[in-house]
Image 1 (cartoon, rainbow, N blue to C red):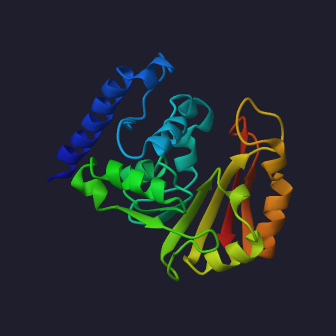
Image 2 (image 1 turned 90 degrees about the vertical axis):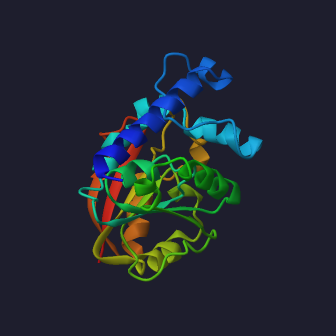
Amino acid sequence: MNKPTSILLFLLFFLLGSIGCKNSPAADAHAGQESTGTEFNGGDKGFADEAERYESADRVIWQKPDLVVHQLGEVEGKVVADLGAGTGYFSRRIAYKGAKVIAIDIDPKAIQWMEEQKAKFPIELQDRLIIRLAEPDDPKLNNSEVDIVLLVNTYTYIENRVAYFSKLMKAIRPGGSIIIIDFKKKSTPFGPPLKERIDISEITSELQQAGYSMEVVDETSLEYQYIIKARRS
């Protein structure tokens, strides 16, 4: 299958998903909002409800996924680990840009969900998307396996973070980077409770302790979240 044809099929998949969602009860709750193309009528019902929240069209507005993906730079031909991938919200967008993506999560239900969705993608995209079950203290990445690690709304749920990110560094190739996006430690219309959030200064300190060199600390591009980019030392 040539590239133009596969891209057309990918776009058709998103269009069909949008139509399906508009005719579903979930869509009625989000009337007038853009659909991401993920269907919520299969797999585990409990995770389907969770997936619907992850994939809410509202998220396109406040999360600005295109801006987030842009933070990764040119990804074509690179390997990107999406750590805490959830429904693959960012994984599929990054794969579409030409990267090989390792979508990682510790929840077996999330893994099953992503596998089911992956089966609906064009073969070209399926070949670029690897879905991997990890453990809370082990991302299950091989040494020098990836160029970039992305964590969106995930950092605060990792324990023993300095040790974890020191270990994670071994998986990043020389010159590679890690990008963290999470909620600011202030009141926002949604997001985790304040007590579960981590101040940006604490994250930068922990990353430096783990051996990373800070490159970008951005508190303005996203209204409710900060963006941190650090490079493997």
